[in-house]
Length: 191
Image (cartoon, rainbow, N blue to C red; front, side, top):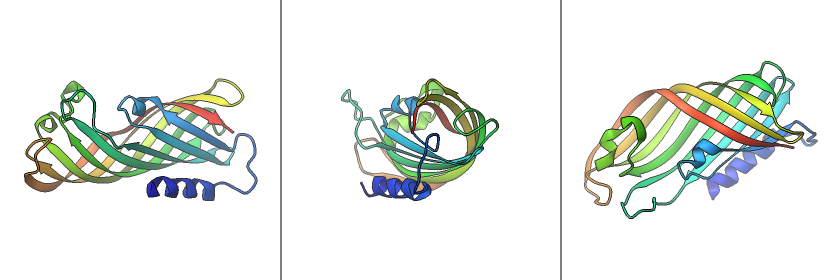
């Protein structure tokens, strides 16, 4: 709850005392929901071609199905964007930072990603950043749809445990990750 309160305070401090139309948008990422992660973001227009966005996701529960899998995590992603047309319309490029914590075990990721994770539990934190690009379509006066992709770097510090339910620690380590750092298909409400 403290992290959510901090997120709200940061967003409110970014906004001016006089908000007007097309200055603030609230959004959610459908692709992040596909991992059963509730998420919310807010984006504020700095001027005609520049915005700042904060995004927060929190997955606090075990997966259903009785297989003891878990994908618990929280993440926080601030992002600066430059819009080629105007804020909240058309193509944009951006730079983002990210950070969070995780506790993952027994999840069968698609395409063989993180295959060693299936029989082990990983607990730790990450921090990083990258670049992104995307496009936003106005659907009506207040509703937009957005797609975006990002690539970048994450430093990941973790503890590896023998299995998902037992607690024997095998090692503490870190890794450097280069690759996709974000993917979004977002529904946006523009105030």
